[in-house]
Amino acid sequence: MKKQLLTTLLLAALPMVAVHADNNITTNPFENDPVFEHFQKLQEDMNKIFEEFNHNAFTNMKIDPNFEKGFSFTPDTDLKDKGDTYELKMDIPGMDDKNIKIDVEDNYLSVTAKNEESKEKKEEGKIIHQERHVGMIQRGMTLPKDADAHNYKSDYKNGVLTITIPKKK
Image 1 (cartoon, helix red, strand yellow):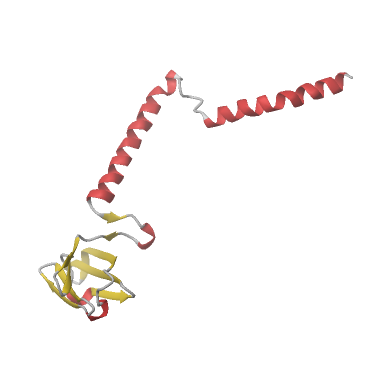
Image 2 (spheres, rainbow, N blue to C red):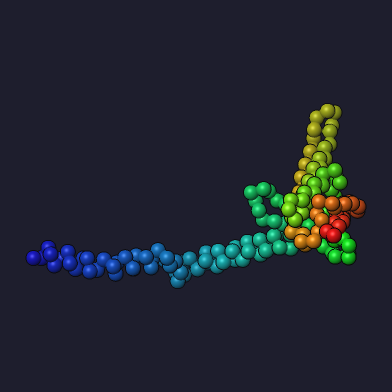
């Protein structure tokens, strides 16, 4: 009889024990502990620093945080209706016009530009110092329905790509 009573009491208490254990796992056990107070403040300060860094790096610098493809910069772009044509201007400074690729599929226009730069200092045939920089710019957009996207003309001058797209008649 005592075994049955003890088993019944344990089974009745089990949900309360589980709730108490769950609360201990989900809350910080050191939350009000004065020994760990300085560590909590340090963690809060570090979280603020990383949040500010991420905001500045990905918002102000216009970096696309799609790390699977590496860093790519999203350039400033303007699309204007010029009556019979659309004019798209895109700021992509420092690119070689041979490395700018424009693709049109359906009514979606995409521009990709890649720049590779290498600096090398040699001393008697041995490389003493070498630096490489690879930059990539990607931008895509859906064009208005009346744009004749396949018949575009492009021009690249002074770091600005201008794409002129006629309207369908």
